[in-house]
Length: 164
Image: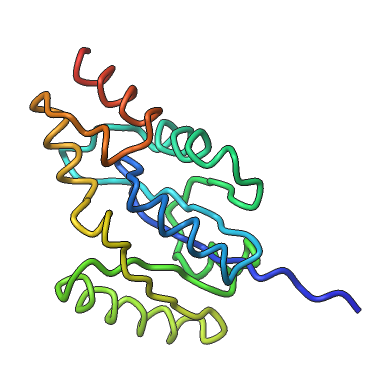
Protein backbone atom coordinates (compact mmCIF):
# COMPACT_ATOMS: atom_id res chain seq x y z
CA UNK A 1 0.00 0.00 0.00
CA UNK A 2 1.44 3.35 -1.00
CA UNK A 3 1.48 6.19 1.46
CA UNK A 4 -0.27 9.46 0.60
CA UNK A 5 2.04 12.35 -0.18
CA UNK A 6 2.36 14.96 2.55
CA UNK A 7 1.44 18.29 0.99
CA UNK A 8 2.07 21.63 2.70
CA UNK A 9 0.59 24.95 1.66
CA UNK A 10 2.53 28.17 2.21
CA UNK A 11 0.27 31.15 1.56
CA UNK A 12 1.08 34.83 1.46
CA UNK A 13 1.13 37.88 -0.74
CA UNK A 14 4.85 37.44 -1.58
CA UNK A 15 5.11 41.00 -2.94
CA UNK A 16 7.94 40.27 -3.61
CA UNK A 17 9.11 36.71 -2.87
CA UNK A 18 12.13 37.15 -0.59
CA UNK A 19 15.01 34.96 0.53
CA UNK A 20 13.11 34.59 3.80
CA UNK A 21 10.16 33.08 1.93
CA UNK A 22 12.49 30.88 -0.09
CA UNK A 23 14.19 29.67 3.10
CA UNK A 24 10.86 28.66 4.65
CA UNK A 25 9.74 26.81 1.51
CA UNK A 26 13.00 24.84 1.31
CA UNK A 27 12.88 24.00 5.03
CA UNK A 28 9.25 22.87 4.76
CA UNK A 29 10.41 20.23 2.30
CA UNK A 30 12.06 18.45 5.23
CA UNK A 31 8.63 17.40 6.52
CA UNK A 32 6.45 17.66 3.40
CA UNK A 33 6.76 15.79 0.14
CA UNK A 34 5.40 18.76 -1.80
CA UNK A 35 4.96 22.44 -1.01
CA UNK A 36 2.43 24.61 -2.79
CA UNK A 37 3.16 28.33 -2.61
CA UNK A 38 -0.26 30.01 -2.73
CA UNK A 39 0.02 33.60 -3.88
CA UNK A 40 -2.79 35.61 -2.35
CA UNK A 41 -4.21 38.86 -3.67
CA UNK A 42 -2.53 41.92 -2.19
CA UNK A 43 -5.11 44.60 -1.58
CA UNK A 44 -2.51 47.02 -0.23
CA UNK A 45 -2.38 50.26 -2.19
CA UNK A 46 1.39 50.02 -2.48
CA UNK A 47 1.42 46.58 -4.15
CA UNK A 48 4.29 46.40 -6.58
CA UNK A 49 3.55 43.21 -8.55
CA UNK A 50 0.41 41.61 -9.93
CA UNK A 51 -0.54 38.15 -8.68
CA UNK A 52 0.54 36.68 -12.02
CA UNK A 53 3.96 38.34 -11.73
CA UNK A 54 4.38 37.03 -8.20
CA UNK A 55 3.49 33.47 -9.22
CA UNK A 56 6.01 33.71 -12.07
CA UNK A 57 8.71 34.95 -9.66
CA UNK A 58 8.08 32.08 -7.23
CA UNK A 59 8.26 29.57 -10.08
CA UNK A 60 11.53 31.08 -11.34
CA UNK A 61 13.14 31.16 -7.90
CA UNK A 62 12.05 27.61 -7.06
CA UNK A 63 12.67 26.16 -10.55
CA UNK A 64 15.41 23.87 -9.21
CA UNK A 65 12.98 22.16 -6.82
CA UNK A 66 10.38 19.98 -8.58
CA UNK A 67 8.48 19.38 -5.34
CA UNK A 68 7.50 23.07 -5.15
CA UNK A 69 4.69 24.58 -7.18
CA UNK A 70 3.10 28.03 -7.19
CA UNK A 71 -0.54 28.84 -7.70
CA UNK A 72 -2.69 31.88 -7.39
CA UNK A 73 -5.03 31.84 -4.40
CA UNK A 74 -8.39 33.06 -5.53
CA UNK A 75 -11.03 34.57 -3.29
CA UNK A 76 -11.93 31.46 -1.31
CA UNK A 77 -10.98 30.44 2.20
CA UNK A 78 -7.41 29.24 2.59
CA UNK A 79 -8.52 25.98 4.21
CA UNK A 80 -10.85 25.26 1.27
CA UNK A 81 -7.97 25.88 -1.13
CA UNK A 82 -5.77 23.60 1.02
CA UNK A 83 -8.31 20.76 1.06
CA UNK A 84 -8.86 20.98 -2.70
CA UNK A 85 -5.08 20.90 -3.23
CA UNK A 86 -4.71 17.89 -0.92
CA UNK A 87 -2.69 19.87 1.63
CA UNK A 88 -2.84 18.81 5.26
CA UNK A 89 -0.42 21.46 6.57
CA UNK A 90 -0.38 25.24 6.46
CA UNK A 91 3.17 26.57 6.78
CA UNK A 92 3.50 29.96 8.43
CA UNK A 93 6.59 31.98 9.27
CA UNK A 94 7.03 33.78 12.59
CA UNK A 95 9.57 36.61 12.71
CA UNK A 96 8.51 38.02 16.06
CA UNK A 97 5.93 38.27 18.79
CA UNK A 98 3.62 40.47 16.72
CA UNK A 99 3.53 37.77 14.00
CA UNK A 100 2.66 35.17 16.64
CA UNK A 101 -0.37 37.07 17.93
CA UNK A 102 -1.84 37.35 14.43
CA UNK A 103 -0.90 33.81 13.37
CA UNK A 104 -2.31 32.21 16.53
CA UNK A 105 -5.71 33.78 15.88
CA UNK A 106 -5.65 32.71 12.22
CA UNK A 107 -4.52 29.20 13.18
CA UNK A 108 -7.38 28.79 15.63
CA UNK A 109 -9.92 29.93 13.04
CA UNK A 110 -8.42 27.61 10.41
CA UNK A 111 -8.53 24.71 12.87
CA UNK A 112 -12.19 25.52 13.60
CA UNK A 113 -13.00 25.53 9.88
CA UNK A 114 -10.84 22.54 8.94
CA UNK A 115 -9.75 20.38 11.88
CA UNK A 116 -7.70 18.05 9.65
CA UNK A 117 -5.50 20.86 8.30
CA UNK A 118 -2.67 21.55 10.73
CA UNK A 119 -0.77 24.85 11.07
CA UNK A 120 3.01 24.51 11.24
CA UNK A 121 5.04 27.51 12.40
CA UNK A 122 8.63 28.01 11.31
CA UNK A 123 11.07 30.55 12.67
CA UNK A 124 13.27 32.29 10.11
CA UNK A 125 16.90 31.44 9.74
CA UNK A 126 19.23 33.89 11.44
CA UNK A 127 20.33 35.23 8.04
CA UNK A 128 16.77 36.03 6.95
CA UNK A 129 15.14 37.05 10.23
CA UNK A 130 15.14 40.77 9.39
CA UNK A 131 13.73 40.45 5.86
CA UNK A 132 10.16 41.46 5.13
CA UNK A 133 8.60 41.97 1.73
CA UNK A 134 7.43 45.44 2.78
CA UNK A 135 10.96 46.54 3.67
CA UNK A 136 12.36 45.03 0.47
CA UNK A 137 9.77 46.96 -1.58
CA UNK A 138 10.54 50.19 0.25
CA UNK A 139 14.31 49.83 -0.13
CA UNK A 140 13.95 48.91 -3.81
CA UNK A 141 11.60 51.84 -4.51
CA UNK A 142 14.21 54.21 -3.08
CA UNK A 143 17.01 52.70 -5.16
CA UNK A 144 18.69 50.69 -2.39
CA UNK A 145 20.50 47.41 -2.92
CA UNK A 146 18.21 44.45 -2.16
CA UNK A 147 20.45 41.82 -3.72
CA UNK A 148 21.19 40.10 -0.41
CA UNK A 149 17.47 39.84 0.43
CA UNK A 150 16.03 38.43 -2.79
CA UNK A 151 16.92 35.97 -5.54
CA UNK A 152 18.54 37.62 -8.61
CA UNK A 153 15.35 37.05 -10.64
CA UNK A 154 13.39 39.07 -8.08
CA UNK A 155 16.10 41.76 -7.90
CA UNK A 156 15.86 42.18 -11.67
CA UNK A 157 12.05 42.43 -11.51
CA UNK A 158 12.32 45.07 -8.77
CA UNK A 159 14.83 47.05 -10.86
CA UNK A 160 12.50 46.91 -13.87
CA UNK A 161 9.58 48.18 -11.77
CA UNK A 162 11.66 51.03 -10.43
CA UNK A 163 12.81 52.00 -13.92
CA UNK A 164 9.26 52.07 -15.34
